[in-house]
Length: 288
Image (cartoon, rainbow, N blue to C red):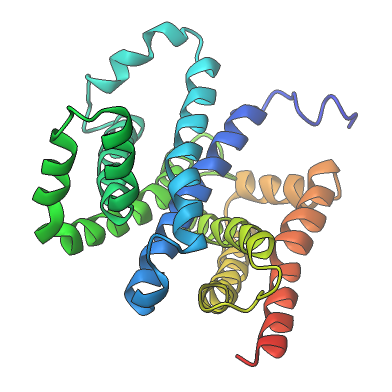
C-alpha cells in the first residue's frame, strides 16, 4: 500500500475530514463532561477561574462549530445544509444527530453564560448596553441552573456516543457495524478532552502542575483509559468471533498494513500507554 492509497481506497467510508470532525466532536463532549463532573465533585475548583472551565468555554462550542463547518463543506451540495436543520426524520440516525447538535449548542451556551455571568454582563454593558435581555435571561435560568447542568451532562454523553451510533449503523461495513462503538467513542472523547485540558493546565500552571483540577482530571483519566482498553479488546474479540466479513475486517485492521502501524503507535502507544504512565507519574509527584 502506497502513502496515497492509504487515504483513498475502494472500501473507504469517509475520508480524513470526517475523521477530524469526529475528533473535534469528541473533544467538545469530553471537555463538557469533565467540567460538569469537576463542578459536582469539587465545586470550589469549578468556578469561572477554572482552567478546565475556561478551556471548555473556548473549545466546547468552538470544536463543534469547526467540526460542523468541516462537515458542511464536505457535503456534495454544502449550500443545502440548512435543510437538515429544519427537516427531521425520527428513523434516521443522522437526522437525530442534527437535532442533538442543536439542543446541545443551545444548552451549552446557556450553561456557560451562567457560569461566566460576570464576564458576560461586563461585555454586554460595554458593547451592547441597551440589550437588557441578556441579564433577564441569566436571572431567569438561575433557579434552574442545577437542572440545566444535569441536562448538559446527559447531552454531552449522548453526543460523545452519537458518532459511534452513526458508524455502527453502517450494516454493509463489518468493521464498523459493532454495538461497542458508541461506548468506545464516548470514552475516547473523554480521554481526548482530558488530554487537551491537561495540556492547557500545564501551560497555565507551570509553577503548580498539581492543582486540584489537574489531580481530578488525572484521577478521571486513568479509569477511562482502562475502559478504552477493555472496549477495544471486546471490539476486536467480537470481530474475531464474527462471520467471514468481520474476520476479513480484523485481518485488514491488524494485518500489518500502514493503518495497523498507525493504530499501534498512535492509538495504543500515544493514546493509551502514554496517558497511563503520565497519570502514574503525576500521582507520585503530587502525592495523590
